[in-house]
Image (tube, rainbow, N blue to C red; front, side, top):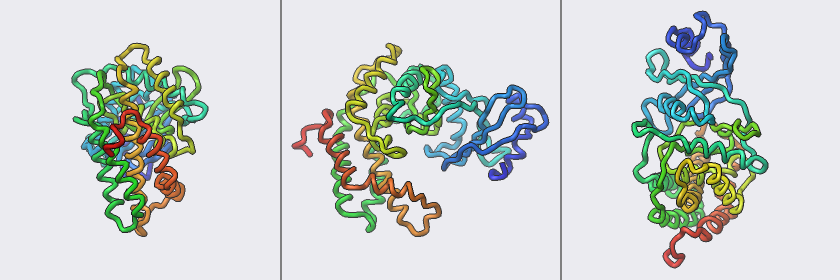
Amino acid sequence: MEQVQGLKEYVTLEQYRKALGLPEEVTETYEMLAQGEYNRNYIFIHPVTKKKLILRVNFGSQMHLENQIAYEYQVLRMLENSGRTPKAFYVDGSLEHLEQGVMVMEYLPGHALDYRTELMHAVGCLADIHSVKIPKEHSLIVPANPLRAILEECEEMFRVYEESPLGQEWQKKKIRKMLDMVWKLVDCLEEPVYRCCINTELNSTNFLINGGTYDNFLIDWEKPLYGDPAQDLGHFLAPTTTFWKTDVILSREEADAFIEKYISEVKGRFDTAGLKKRTDVYIPVTCLRGITWCAMAWIEYKNPDKVIFNESTFQKLEAYLSREFLEQIETDYLFQNKMMPNPLDW
């Protein structure tokens, strides 16, 4: 608690304690659970209900929002009926009593997804979340052209590497060629017949797996959008996602089986027409987003003034920029992609 100035005093506030049904006197203990770049999570046990809760303190926004914590809170409330996300009980983004935004939500059990043994446990979880009907009046950000927005972000990140004297020329040429190829997919993307709340960051560590049919969950809703479920599927299945925290790259057969199972689990709750085709567009685009981010981060890691240097992260950056990995992505997800225009146009 001491790591966040004023938080110890904040949990004594009447508005906080009344909203959560906490006794006037602070008897609960807050312990660090996890910390990211933009958030710090504390776990505590409610002294009355005895349920485990998470106090989330927000320090910034990847989406450049003025009230990031309120955005997350509203999304969790919208998705509550899915049964697959944490219930949110309290939010304060006013910054009146604390310099950071605060949210309290339920603690959910489970472990990170194992792609090799638990891949299909994520299917029902995603299908249930994507099936939640979003009201016409909602707070979700709606990208005008999501594919173009991702590729523009790729260009911005790659520019850091492309313009740096530290970058290798063969990598610059290779990534430039791959980006140019993926840009050709922008006009191939069909308009989705259905939109929903998508997570956009479906890493294995954001899943909480318990092994049953209905007790697997998805947490970490920092960057949700109102968009095409194919964008989530593309991110989840892309090799740049699976390989980051593991040594797993799913085969095309495994990816296709996942999509087929997902459509089955939707059970007609929304129209899945064209879903697989659109996912086949989002997978290579997601790959390039991962590669260009790694290229940018590699330059940053070469800065001698960098305060935090994580050796395992640097080794992953090297792996993503290796000739073997780049050529595998180019061959398997660009040259062999059925959605790609005529190769003679490249």
